[in-house]
Image (spheres, rainbow, N blue to C red):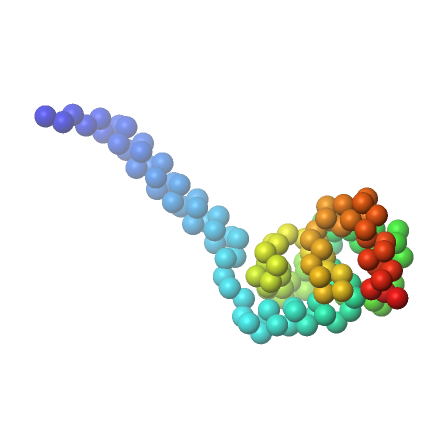
Length: 142
C-alpha cells in the first residue's frame, strides 16, 4: 500500500502554484506583446533620419554616460542626432519594444551610428577605448 504524506504534498502544490503565479506576473510585466509593424517601421525611419540615434531614459546613468561621451566629450552636434527619452514620451514603451524586435536589445541606451546598431553604453565605451569610435564618427559626420 502507498503511504502519502499530505503535509509534503500540500507544500509541493503551494510551491507550484506560487511559481506559476510569479512567472505569469513576471512575464506580463516584461510586456511581451508584439508591437505593430507600423511602429517597427516608424522606429526604423527614426533610426535613419540622422547619423546618430540614441534611445535613452532620462534617469538612466548608462544613458547619461553615453550621451556625455557622444555630445560633450566627442562634440557630436545635436543637429546630427535623434535622441529619444523613452520615459518622457507616451509611445516610449512601444519604441523600446520595437527596438528589441529590430536588434534584440531591450535595454537602454540603444545606440545607432549611421544606421548601424552599436549597442549600449558599454559597447560605445569599448569602441572609444579601442580607438574605433572617433574615426567612425569622423567618417559619418563628415
